[in-house]
Structures are given as structure tokens and as C-alpha cells.
Length: 149
Length: 81
Ligand SMILES: [Zn+2]
Image: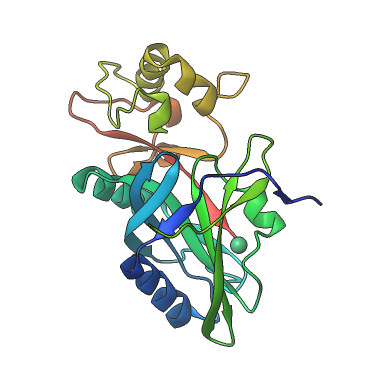
């Protein structure tokens, strides 16, 4: 099954603070999957992420391989975006002991527009991360990390 | 969703049911309709509608009555593996 494509997105930048919060959540939640939202601004298509909202993984079973975010947590995220005048740009989650590549389940339930940041946690330590976004054909294309000048 | 609503995050409707408010919203933002509704005009399966803090599934579905100050939220299901 094809999950990824070679489409090109302008890229993403996570602030040091945003990375720290996401990585700590990923390590703390290991061996289960963590999840949350991130916020920022889109400048010439490139996403500058400055804020993070950590939320609970609401699935009860198979927490090492699945995550879900409740509607009430989604509403909190929308409210935070409005209050802080930022855009809700995506969702992060971890892949315990798996690479940061979207799974077929990730693809099946993915929404357009959002960046999907995946953090690979190997034996409890963050190993690497990658960001993905649905392309026009409905496959995940990588959104490369772009450092600020 | 805001890219389909001329960047507005909220919308005031006088519809007195969920159905009427959604019709009002879709009537105002043409592009949004295609995002929210399927070919049969039903809400897409990955979307939930909340009235205040309650899922309309636990109420009267799209027939749920709205008061003047009720807040209706359209929420995408966020999940993965
Ligand atoms: Zn995943």
C-alpha cells in the first residue's frame, strides 16, 4: 500500500521550546504513544511552530500503536489558537520503537491541511522526528525541517 | 477549516436546530460545504458536532434544538497509529 509521495511542501520549523515539550512528552509517555497539538504562523507557506498543547491519548487499548484526541481537547486547542492569535497547524504523536514514517492507519484517518509531526522513540529516547502533510492526491508527503536564517 | 470561511473562526446563525444552523453556514461559505458534507448532503464521517460540551449523537442529532446563545462546534476526529 502506498502511503507517502514525493510532493513538496515549503517546510516546517519547530522552535526549541516546542521541540523540548514534544520530545519530553514522547519520552514520558513511552512505551505508549503521546499526542498533542502545535501552533504558529505560516509565512510564505513555511510553518513556524512556537506553541504546543500536550493532550491525553484517549484510546484505552493498544496505546503503544494507536492514539485519539477527544473532541473536548480539540475545542481547547481551537480556543488556545484564537486566544493567542496563532494558527492551529498540526498534530504530533510518537512512534514507540518505530521510525517516524506514517503508518497505513495514520493515512486512513489523516485530515488535510494539518502537519503531522511524528517522533520516533527508540528504547525510551527520542531518536528522530519528521513532519508530513497530505498532498492533493491524499498521500503523505514530507514537510522538511527548515532552519531560520 | 478556516481557509474555507474567509478566515473566520466563528459564525453567528439564527438557525434553531443543528440542521438549520449548518445549512445557514454552508449557504454562506460555499467552499466549506464540500469539506463538511458528503454527496448526500450528510456531515462527513470524520466530523462531530457538539452543542456546548455535548455530542449531538447523545442529544437529538441534527434535530437538536438550539437556543440563541448556544455554541455549536464542528470538530474533526483526530487519531492515528
Ligand atoms: Zn503514527
